[in-house]
Length: 411
Ligand code: HEC
Ligand code: HEC
Ligand code: HEC
Ligand code: HEC
Ligand code: HEC
Picture 1 (cartoon, rainbow, N blue to C red):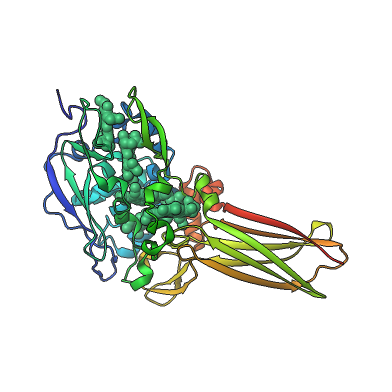
Picture 2: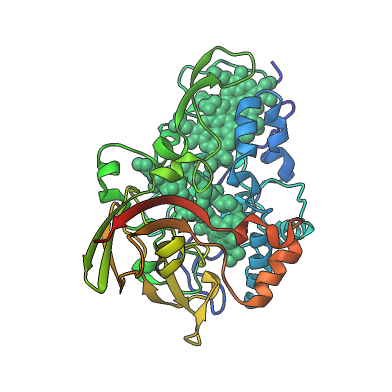
């Protein structure tokens, strides 16, 4: 049997850590600490996802449709990477790639080459792809920030004990692949310029949520179980959806419930919207820094004309070292406001407005959505310029989550 004939042969164990260190103008998530860089070239050690496609077509197609496959492609990412490089004076050029193309942690001296790939807009390297996850052997959570440990060799780790042997790689089951820990290295902390204390934390107190206590892992919701082929031509079995539903996909509709109550008292009316987050972690997660959810209330009176509108915004407002509001977490040294919905939080919002006139009823529309990107005009123009869709790039559009409409009769 020719093992790893096509997909790489390196054998090395490398410890990669995102340690807490506050560089002058660098980042809270600073240099990874590698014990040794493998001698074998990158393509051998981290085989490209195309190599897996040949036998894992279903998984590949799902992953290709996921945001993870575009972790170094998006115009918003490229534009903010430029912002980061300018801000940091290239002190730690690989910082953004630590999670967006994690093999850079192992090949640190290639960070500038990785960056040129990203800049090209059509990188030949992968971002967060198959081998970037399936070579992770361990996640160490004894430190403040979770650390991944790669075992760079001929074995790919996965969920199955009873795997079918194959000619390309060895397989080994690891419990880690069914556990949230696998995801935490990259989904735990805001890559801020300074330690923001509790507000550095992306997920909030997720471990004490009902969902977590009842045994749900990140995979339960974001890699839902289905039945299919795990490799071409193999028997159907339980597999994990690799489209990573999140903002895209119908998981979104399970993010929150809205309840609307109205009270009309003569000339004045009041609407109370109860927003119940069904998510076992912060909503939104606050990286990138412009991530926001917007609760929008619209009142329509005579002829369905809008007579009142107001919004509530959930997110974090960061300040830079000069104390100014910043759209970028990489320059954040402080949190000015924090309105994120905590895990499974219920929040009541009240809105008061003049009762609509000359009508027998009015409509109340309450909707919750992810807000489009926001930031300085030069940054937004850069995204537009980087995108083949220009101003039509999806990042400029809100993403609707839930909506409630109610008709309120007036006497
Ligand atoms: C090596 C780092 C890394 C690991 C490990 C990782 N992710 Fe991610 N994840 C990312 C990055 C980077 C993105 C953003 C991709 C983009 O849109 O640019 C992302 C995006 C996502 C999204 C989409 C979010 C959205 O806004 O729609 C989901 C869902 C997700 N990851 C779930 C998971 C789960 C579940 C795991 C564990 C099984 C996991 N991730 C492990 C880096 C990682
Ligand atoms: C600790 C891991 C980590 C680091 C370091 C990191 N990111 Fe991210 N990034 C993520 C994850 C995880 C997501 C997905 C977040 C979500 O949807 O909740 C993401 C999403 C994004 C997005 C939105 C998706 C997209 O591709 O448009 C942008 C933009 C982004 N990151 C830019 C950056 C920049 C710029 C840096 C460096 C200053 C950086 N990131 C550093 C983990 C990281
Ligand atoms: C020559 C075909 C072939 C190639 C190429 C291939 N695989 Fe596999 N792989 C298989 C077969 C067959 C299985 C067994 C599936 C089963 O047991 O249902 C498998 C199983 C796996 C598993 C599950 C292991 C476990 O124990 O849970 C993972 C993860 C995996 N492959 C990842 C990859 C990745 C990543 C690549 C690319 C770097 C890759 N494979 C390339 C054929 C291949
Ligand atoms: C963000 C990390 C991540 C990425 C990227 C990723 N996987 Fe997985 N993969 C997992 C996890 C976690 C599981 C186990 C999920 C479970 O069983 O709950 C898994 C399961 C699998 C399995 C067995 C179950 C199944 O769905 O067939 C195969 C095979 C596999 N992955 C191959 C791949 C290939 C090939 C790619 C790239 C196209 C890839 N994975 C990308 C994390 C990842
Ligand atoms: C009980 C189901 C459930 C579990 C468990 C869960 N999530 Fe989520 N997650 C959701 C829902 C629902 C949303 C909101 C809708 C959406 O954007 O997907 C969400 C959103 C997200 C997003 C996108 C948020 C944003 O603001 O862009 C990321 C990233 C994410 N989850 C990562 C994780 C990670 C990492 C874990 C494990 C620590 C996890 N989730 C556990 C249900 C879950």
